Image (cartoon, rainbow, N blue to C red; front, side):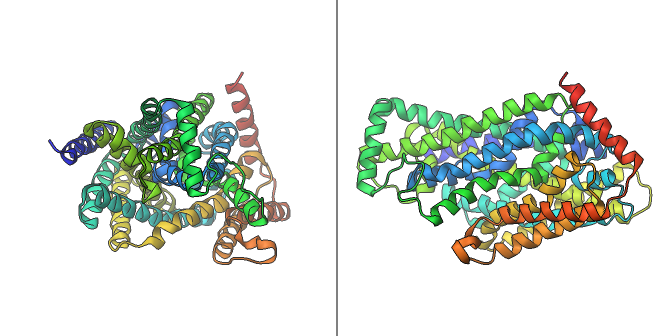
Length: 505
């Protein structure tokens, strides 16, 4: 068999496995709570790895190793910011959100939690939140479909649209039928694949190159040839623009508090106490995966230096090293790990978008009492409709959609992050404060994202930082002016605090 044939076999096995998980999850899904939140019965290991896989996407296997290969460890600051943000999210948000969403009328989506937490009888908060999720995630899903089409085109020589349809078809199938359980279980498997692949490449590369000392000397020789210092964490000299770049990279961590497809995993945990185990597993996974990505880049630089060859596209360093170091069948599963990273993110975003349409917009506007089966059917239809719209947007390959990913991360982080934190840790947050905060975060991100320069290059900072801070300030000021005491709200807040404290006794 040819190398391509082996790699195709590996890809078919991977795709079949994802569809099997979708079928298995379909058998376990009987009502809307199951479809949207897995019946709050998610094992902490599944929650942790599925959150990580849904978060990282193809950036972990291609973007980060490529950036380290091209310019060195100074590109790792974003990984530092993301790891710190994920730890803070698991430490402080996860236990409170798991407890509070159950206390607040058993909320199964982020917008429904905010409505129940703040007693918003106007339903405006729920609808606005749902619309923000719907708009941003439709673009997000589209960007994932573009990435899937490009991957299949570059890896197997397929037509871009054929590749996109294959990737989208399998992802839509297991998401549509299996719901939250299928997304979480497939993300768990995909997270394992990503971490194992990123650990295997540098370990085997180190052995074949002769150990740490040999790799280190080869990297230094490669640096001398390319005029780089890959091992330097800080640029030389430290200019104002370089400092803004580091601050912007670290600011990515703020986005975690407001990402609906990530924090919904906290809501689905079996109990509040299991947030601790989830944090340890999730951060352990991140450290292995990010460390493996960095090591893959450095081993790749050493390998190409020793062979006297040049890697044309740094973002392919993981793929090329997998093909060089392993049997074609194993290399095929290495390729499947890249696809897993893309599909895990798309499926998570599809499900959250579906929940926004059904649970947060349809149920808020439609007062008719319907059965759970009716709403599950609508949820599946919503997955299909959003997929068709996102696919139409991705039909013509468009790099501007891919560029929107960073913008959308900032938009979610600034729109929802401050509101989520204040709803969990501040008694006096009001409906008006939450609405004003979400609008402010979105507008500031949109403005900062479209201007550059300014005094001291202030507008070059990543837009999530000013957006998050402005939204936090507005939420505080407006809530102070509009807050009204509500006995039930205060009782629920106190009950949640005690529940979290008791969970860790």
